[in-house]
Amino acid sequence: MKTQFLFPHRFKIFGWMLFVPTFLIGTYLYVTDFEFDEHLKLPVFSIYNDDWIFSKGIFKFIENGVVDELLTVLIVIGALLIGFSKTRKEDEYISKIRYESLVWATYFNFAVILFSTLFFYGFAYFHVMVGNIFTILIFFIVRFHYKLYKANISTDEE
Image 1 (cartoon, rainbow, N blue to C red):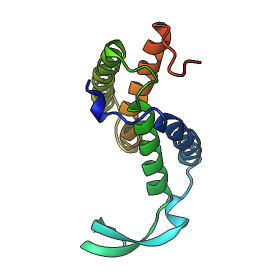
Image 2 (image 1 turned 180 degrees about the horizontal axis):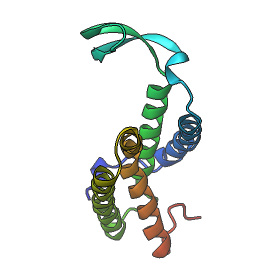
Image 3 (image 1 turned 90 degrees about the vertical axis):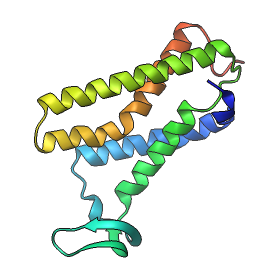
Image 4 (image 1 turned 180 degrees about the vertical axis):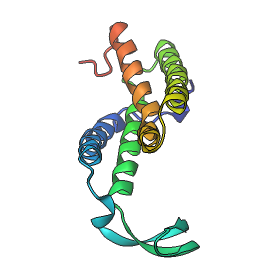
């Protein structure tokens, strides 16, 4: 994997600072059935809106609770910074581990999607797909850091 597409190492700590609190808050609010659209309502630009109660429309401003969008954006940005920031000592072996972890995460993620499609139905399937927005990045981060740990390669050497 070419390192020209990786963020500098210093972005990793910022990624953790974004990811951990927003992931915990988002998970808590999702599990407790927090009504996202009732809080922090702002006018936002919508490419397409299919609000069955009020109106349909394309390319217009709508009033929307942005808590869920804000949490999603921060979780994804944090996970991208964690997963795709260089280690302190980025070499070919670490690049190989990164590549293999990304391929493994992709396969595993689509196995979860296929399994869910076959065995989850209705709103439960929707919940699985919402979680699946983040799982490929989370699977990648977990496997990459686990493989680094197993190889006794510290990402933050003394």
